[in-house]
Length: 67
Image (cartoon, rainbow, N blue to C red; front, side, top):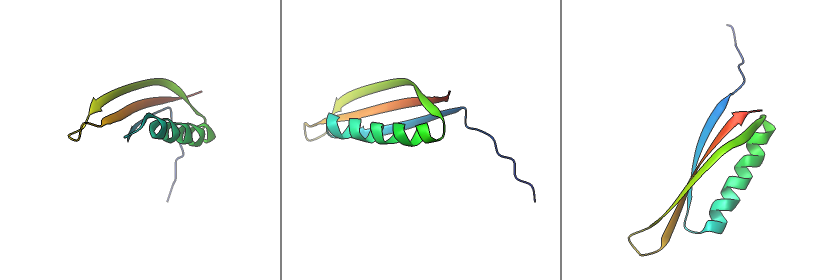
């Protein structure tokens, strides 16, 4: 049995939350986790919509790349 280990070059993660503060907290936590595997933030895209109850709903996409 043979194992081949390859380093991640790109990674895209999606986040969502009902408050901007919660969304920022989720993203910051994952940034720290991804730094441990040598990935850095390449770009961030975010959006806000209104849910069925009239509350804002925040989403974000973060693209990580190897340093």
